[in-house]
Each structure stands twice: as structure tokens, then as C-alpha cells.
Length: 283
Image (tube, rainbow, N blue to C red; front, side, top):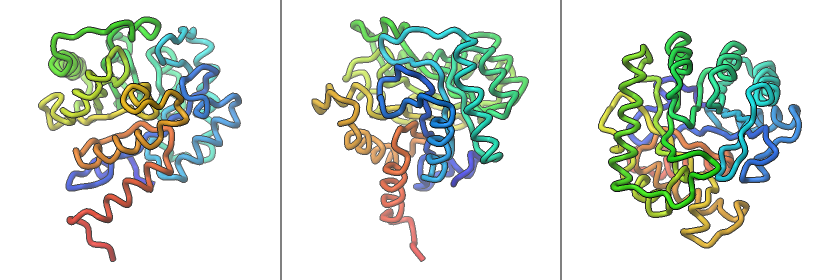
């Protein structure tokens, strides 16, 4: 298993780090990603670590289009025991908490989480303060609107410019508030208030979304609605092949992290691609 130090993001054809998704929710868009009990969620997280995940991203509130919000207490009750269970079995595991709520994030960091994955861009001053004071990693994402309405005819003048400017402004704001840029990942927010064309434009621009070398980029495309629009695969269970196609593109474009539901399949794909690279010598 690769660790999330700088070596996990080394250039020169190295693999993207894999972030395995553990949803402790009843309503996440991909039913097979849902864990109905704490034990099931812990087992899923440990399996993903064995399959090659560098990061386990644990979420207790769905952010799929149309999702209903969850209160902080309920979200914490879902995720905290899972974090504790994984870290009890694997004390060195790199755990990310997928939350927009500073109080949930604070509790997660206190028991050993090393990253906060905030789909609201860490705009909350309390979230920025928490990241700066604890020196944890942070992923900030762009979204247009709220989960309940974000896919209702999203419109941009220029999606690449608007998303890039937003993420650049978030990095600058975080840096001015004491957050180390080298611990920030940006996420263009594929499917979060974007049409298929918007999504494709953001994927094509890759790491040039914001012109900084000191931040890293994460793609979260796993089994998303874009594959229904692009390939006609209406059910999330039918979208693995399309997802792997994007993962292959991520390898070639030097994307740093892929957030995925299927760790083993991604690890096999990327490892095979790495060993076929002209820059790799297999001993």
C-alpha cells in the first residue's frame, strides 16, 4: 500500500493514488457502495486498503443530486465508529472524512483522520481554521448549487474558467489563513452542477485547471451519471468500464488522486499501464 506522503504523488509516470469510497449512508447513488452497519463499513475499508487504496474516504451524508441533508449528530454517529474501527485494525491507515460540517470534521480529526474532503470548498471559516490548526490534508471541490437542485439546468459562461477561478481563489484564501498549499487537493466536482459537456471540458483540461505546481488534483468520476449520458449506461452497476476509461486517461495526464468505488479494478488497470510504460523497467 502506498502512503500519502510526497512519494505517493511523484511524477514521471507514477500511479495516481487511489481513494476508496466507504459510504455509511442509506441513499448514496451507487447501492453497492453503501454500508448498512459499522462492521460492514469497517470491513469494506480494510478490504480496500488490501486492494491498493492509499486513502479511505468515509462519508455519512450523501451528496448525490437530490439528496436530503443530514444533521451533524446523525452524521457523526455514522462515521466516527467506522474511523475508530479501521484505525484499530490498521493504526497507520490514511483516513479522510467526507463532510461539509466543521464539527463533524473536528471530531474525526481528533480520533485520527488525516484528511478532510469538503465538497463545499471549505468556505466555512471554522473549517479553514480547523485545517490550519491541525495541519491535516484538505480536498476542496467546486459545486454549483446544492445537491437538491444542482443538476437543474446548470449554466456557465466558460466552465473551465469559472471552476478554475473558484478553486484558485479557494487555495489563495486557505493559504492566507494558514493552510499549507502542498496539503491541498482540488476537485473540479464532476457531476456537481455540470452537464456532460461541462464534465468533459473539465476532464480534458486536467492538471492545467489552475496553474500552480504546489497543489494536487483529485478526480471523482467513479460510476457517475456522466456515463449514462456518454454511454447510455443508466444503472451505476453498468458504469465500471467507462470509469476505468477515465482512470486510464488520468494516468496519462498525471492526475494525482482518483476517488473510486472499485479499488481492485483500478489498481490492476493502473499497475498494468505503469508496467507497460516506456519509462519503467520490470525486474
